[in-house]
Length: 260
Image 1 (tube, rainbow, N blue to C red):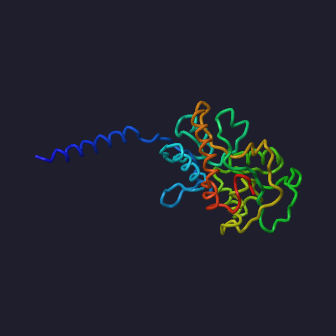
Image 2 (cartoon, one colour):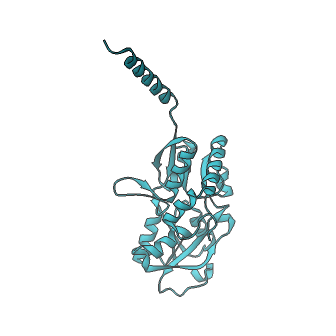
Image 3 (tube, rainbow, N blue to C red):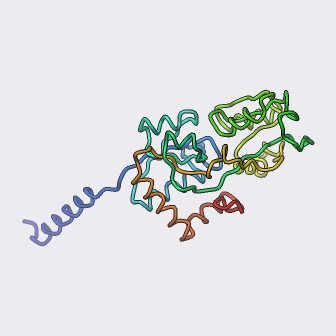
């Protein structure tokens, strides 16, 4: 017969294991695009990485949640949230009044601006409907960049693409004359990638609140007010303790939160 103390110890271990099991971490699903480097992208091995993803996973950790990553094409990303395919979106989404009608947003987790990108030899410096009339302008479909291009340059040939990578590819190949996109990933593409060496950032940053809103936030379903406040508290915490800066500095040379 086994020693009584051994039996009691084993029973205590099983009981403790049961308690841990009952106190399992909250499960949440993090929705992102996976096609917007360096903010969110899929590596060759299928791992989803990037600034958005690291910030999202750190916030999950701070609120005591285990988060599964779900990728979704951009044009279906808000409908996917509303349909409960995932519990929140962290995918460099501008906080705009139009989007607030469908989803709720946390406080911004970084500032926002858009920009023009042209071929390196392009001498164009003024970006108006008149100067761009007839030119082929690329942008990602379903974005505020696309909305800006269509409204600011009605006499141009606006071409919309499913992903930012496809816009970049047509820019490299010369199938479009210029593009409108999010400032930070395009700055990264132009300055750090081989393909981006074809091109340059041009003109003043586009900061009209109609298009860039109040910055970039995490989107949640309208009714998830408690989860939104938990994320806001966690975001303030990682800003205060230096974790945000450590993640920021892995990807960028400026502070995304202040754009300085």
